[in-house]
Image (cartoon, rainbow, N blue to C red; front, side, top):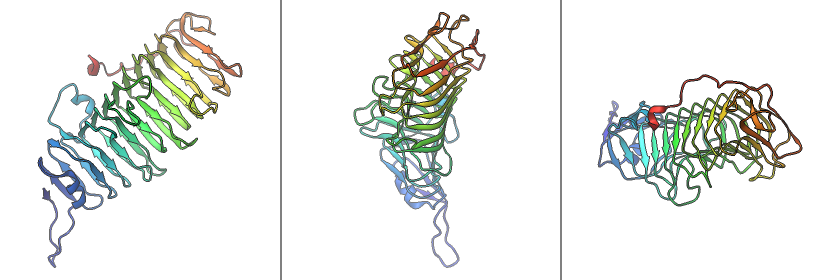
Amino acid sequence: MDEAGEHDMEGVMVVPSVVFVEPGESIQNGVNTVDAYGTVIVAPGVYNENVTVNKPGVQLHGAQYGVDARERIVTPVPESIINGTVSLAEQNTVIDGFTVQNVAGNAGIVTSAAFSGYWVFNNIVQNNTFGIYLNSADGTITQVKQNVVRNNRQPGAASGNGIYCDQGLRNAVIRDNFLTGHDPANAAGINITPLVQNAASRIWITDNFLFQDSSIALTNTTFVTVSQNCLIQNIGASAIFFGGGTSFTDIESNIIQNNNRGISVTAVFTGTENTGIRVKHNNIQGNIFAGLQVVNNAYSGILNATNNFWGNASGPSGIGPGTGDAIINGDPDTTILFEPFLTSPIARIPCQSSIVS
């Protein structure tokens, strides 16, 4: 392990700001050695250990630091591979450019609910019990970007979730990630389900691609934007699922196509009605059972679902006048507005077809 430290004039070792870790050495020793706000640079190779980053501002840089993980599953490159859990347990800590895999009974990457400002960038997170255990306190924005999260279904609690929150998440961006291969029956691709109402707030879920995966699931959340995502072929799941207790959710400019259901609004997990859902400018088509379904006692007030394309120029079926995806309203206390609707799909950049081709 190389250290970029030096001695001062009195011969006292200055704590290094950069530490290099080679195969056969320990990443955790590198974290223990580096100064706060320093960087641990990890060479390509396999590292069989759990790592806890418990100094503020420390960054872990893998061999593919700064390289979008979605590109690397198309064209493989040398990786820094950690067979173990990486826990970010201090303010403003970073993991960037790793493959984190094969964890039984835990997530591949964990962020503590006690801190904020995490950066989880450019990682392949695969074959763990669940992928990223994402919690954070209020404060500096937390970002999860350009990761591949796939096939996290080993046995254990929370198995089958891609990105999972149950403690709280505030001021966070989940953007430009590819998720696939999670459990559509008992978990979700992105599952924001804190135990306390409104413990997850000010969250942007945008430009992600969930393919043959599971839902974006929201329970007990407030002020969430779900925009410009591709949610395709999530058979056995709803593309977007509400479990109850949510408020002020915008669903805008998504491609919601060929899933079991497009958007499902329930209160199954809390018994508390959802409020303030707005569904605008989405392509909702080819979903098997419904494009939008609200079950009894799941929603309070007016649900605005105008200006969407429902798969046919005639508009939605169900309570609508057309032959497109159905709108099903099972809650007599809910009014769903769907007119005007779009007669052709919204043009946008195609989903990341190179990943699934």
